[in-house]
Length: 113
Image (cartoon, rainbow, N blue to C red; front, side, top):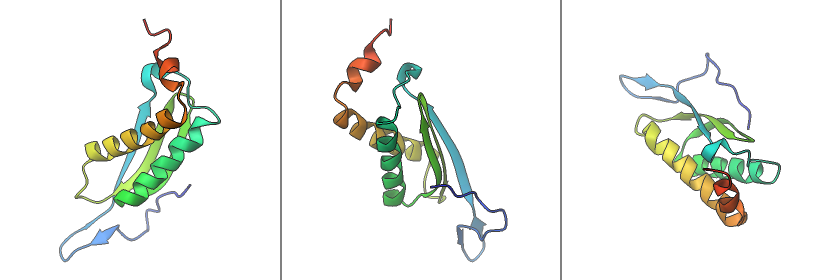
């Protein structure tokens, strides 16, 4: 889902005395920066991010997962906190990945120490 924010676009919302347009670029690496996000896992993570954004009312601009990191650019309302957005995205995209790929936990733990 690729959409770039337009500087001339209307604000996300207008009120009697204020308007707002809030965007945030979120980034998080995989645990120990392991290269685990490949051809099979990347679509699962990106799909869950899209679902979470639709469910919570975030305006997703773009979401991309590469081998060891995830980037998300989205718009949000002032009632949302960035820490809650990050928690929602990370928790709801990692749980399905661990459920679908049972050997993922073992791969992450390998060669840690």
